[in-house]
Amino acid sequence: MSTSTHTETPDTLSVQNDASPRSVFATTHWSVVLTAGRSDTAQAHVALEKLCRLYWYPLYAYVRRRGHSAADAQDLTQEFFARLLERRSLSAADPNRGRFRSFILTAMNHFLADEWKKGVAKKRGGGQALISLDMAAAEERFDLEPADDAAPDKLFERQWALTLLDEVLDRLEQEHQSAGKDGLFHALKQTLMGTRESQPYAELAPKLGLTENNVRVAVHRLRKRYRELIRNEIAQTVESPQDVEDEIRHLFNVLSDR
Image (tube, rainbow, N blue to C red; front, side, top):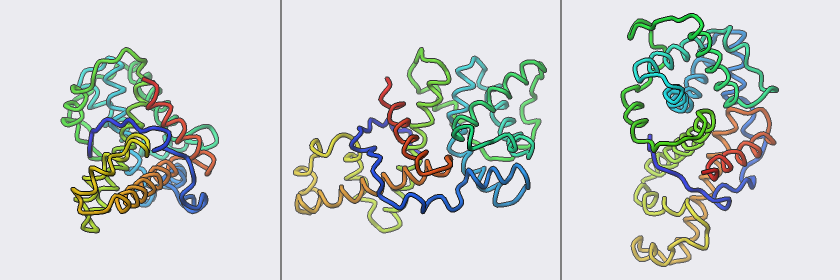
């Protein structure tokens, strides 16, 4: 997964609806995970794993910023997700009481408070890793992050936003690779940042062997698909189409709040 810094503008993260609002709500990861609170199914496990892949690094960084050492943060994060797979943990999730993003952070805070009260000394490698998490890479990534005096929960939300956009960018790249257009993707990826008026269409055209108008069309399609993937990714963790719009606005606000 990439770790690029995003500086999307409202133009890029427009909440205009490029797809049918209801089309992504038939069965979301969120609804499947809620079902896991009542029955442990293979489908629910897969859905939870997909959500964990998006949220585990922001939570790891959050635990580190709460003052825990790298070793303790690794154990705590792994144990947290192991417990989350238990039905009694998932049964507390309620889409009517907030986004999955809010639920997962609240659950982590309760978990950390519980561990603190118990004073349990974790033994590294003592528990079974139910979800594969690259903790060594996480610590390397954490070391590269700039110092920031903002509250850990604010930094968690920013890391969530960046991680989500990185996930979307990876999916967009994979789609282009599958279509044999990875060269076009890498040439146009820069156009996902900034306003349409600021894009270097005239510079890109001769490099790609295309007319300037063809580049504009390609960029339009790339941005449209980017927005669709952002909507679809966010839709997996909210309850309604209106929640998607609100969450996209929140995502941009988080990114613009420097």
